Image 1 (spheres, helix red, strand yellow):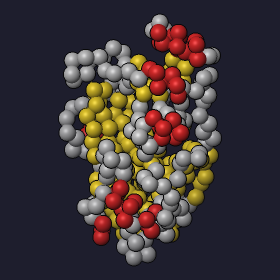
Image 2: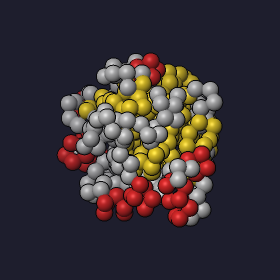
Image 3: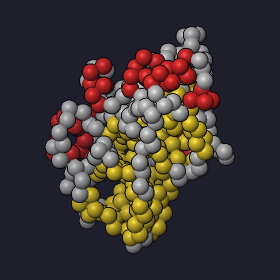
Image 4: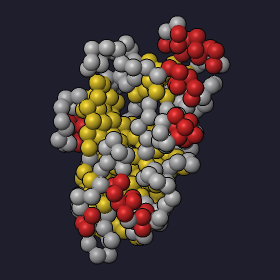
Length: 314
């Protein structure tokens, strides 16, 4: 049994930059590349398998044709999506729907609860997380009157920070931030405010205020993330969140460390360093920017190197 190594896919964004090339060595399409879709089975950007017997197939194909790789997990769509985001400029202030609203209003899409691990950011960087309105009427009034400084909650950030962003949370990454995002497999975003930016068509970019107000949690509630750190031989495991949608961890490896994959499947992204994944039969090299899935029944394995990995599972 082999890991499934994945070829990243890139998205141009008005707020994107070149950090994905500078930090990860990716061959990005242009100087406004905002998103690396690293592990995805979403129709707007499915990942392609790079190795083994499934080489050339897309992840959504495997989900349908080889459910045994994912322990026959229920659901029509692969449930998770891993991205790396380069905020070369401020992203729009936005909010995502939950499952029920998205299913009803977005052609059966999943909702979008997500989380961010701050890989890097400029000094004094910040992000928008939540709002100060106490009622729906106050939220509407503050939006209509452009009281953005009073409405939006801004938080200072630093590399290594983690934020859990449940659906219904008004949020935005801001300029100079590089983030690994683990999310439900959804591409539904409702823009609340976009700094009056002009899109490629020469017009202000579309807002989605009616839907945004419908789905926003009022008053704001912080997503809970109770971090726990466990020391094992030659590694440190940080648990960031265990939610209904996903669990997310950071593995910091210093030498040879033993792990076990006993979940339906496990998503792994290498954000620092390099090393080898060693099974009883063979070994696989990886480096910063490598992404792979450990399928069902993968069992015990070792990682050998100096590296940091973000790991998630349902």
